Image (cartoon, rainbow, N blue to C red; front, side, top):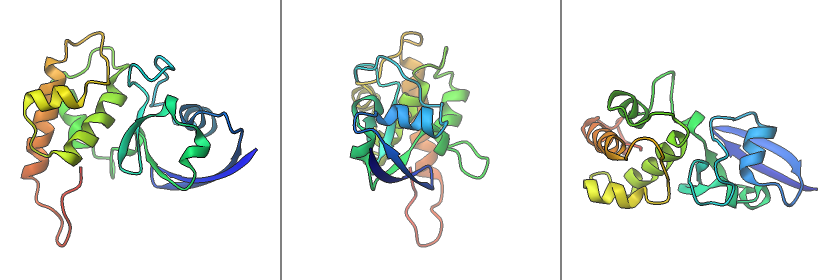
Length: 166
């Protein structure tokens, strides 16, 4: 057993884990954060994407011990003060989801994309979401939702003394 400490969605957790425990299983089984689904378990589909220290990663390909000392944001951590994140709102308003299985991973990958490129083109959104598969939507509404969220975030005034966060 290895001792780990990580901050997940703003809360610090200290735990003992098996060295082979995947981050996705730690989040779901130990912390009860089931919003991040287990998709393919091979890193191909992207459904399990979370933010690890500012970068989107597929949590089925990261060991919990590798995340020791890190900050993790899951889809549950996107909303703030009871308000949906602009990406969540845009996916809802622009029908960027159907069955919803890929949505948590799409949201997290899109969040990372917009942090790096706050004004992407449709092609840049498609490229940025390449590692996330959707079997239902045909992607068009997902791209529209990401572009709408990007627009909303650019138009929001930043709190005084801070840059707008994605």
